[in-house]
Image (tube, rainbow, N blue to C red; front, side):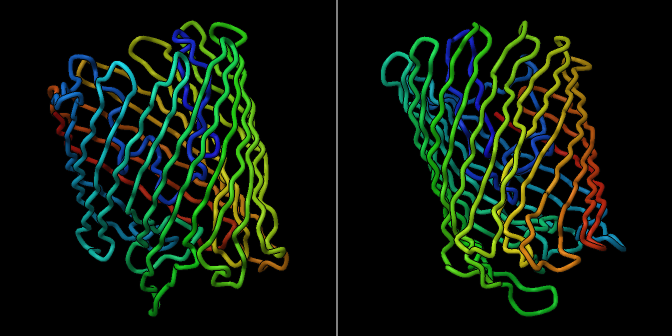
Length: 430
């Protein structure tokens, strides 16, 4: 995400705000309130039900698996005559966290094997592996690093690219290295990040092959940031990130040169109020230009926020707002600005029983080129809402049941859809 900020505890006097992903990858990034790849549906295990893990030398291991059944009433995200199906998931995962006094290293790996009852051509097998870490240099100075690899799929609700009979598969690789230093109230930092995408070809619904080589690309970014802690529980921060995007093919399927560069300039406030409300608020200006003069610059203002409110000891409210510029190979657009807004509430009814609810809204504002078709996609609005419950059986097992609703309202005629999902999940973790 272009504006995703890692919050530090003020009690520890840590000031830098670390920028997250170079480019928000809508194809693989799961909604935080949906039990998607790499994300468990449990917001927080109660203390008496937390898995203890296995000690392996200087690491604590947490292996686990989710066995899930998903019912959807619109497999193909179609406007007319929706078709239902049941999808069975097997999701193994493992994490390893270091227990060193200095430095830290976290390793993780997981997969999502999905099997459709009626439409086996939509089956997929997703994998991911990665690590994050920190190297303490001196007091209040440290290096941070990360690396990850994902082999994933695009679902049919991705409207920014042409989809085929089977899910479009792609590889995503990423790596980053950063350095942060704190000078009493002032903090400074820098992070370099690389991200690469490699898409597979896929069969068309109408026959033939969709060649996706023109979507393969890599991006490099450098972010500079600074923060000033003017109160014990409040900090002002600013950052500037410049990045370049290089497509493997000079021309895409429509004859456009989509390589280019961009930047994100942000400023905001990080705060904590009576341990009840904490988070960060920021405003950003995002810009993306292209080598091809026929492609209009994609730019706009965006709001960034990550808020946590604890009205009672049993209730948590989470809110997220963020903005990003996304890539597309659509003939009519140079790119689109994405705005995301979501709120989730978790409440502990009993020590072993949690309930939750969420609502989300996402907009896609396409930057159409001069001479675009009259009925070209201009704007998409996606609404989501749902609720669920988690029953913790013991430290090693839990059950989850949830319902979600999603609706797309598009400027493109007959492209709207509505989909309802029901999830049942058995989670096992050591």
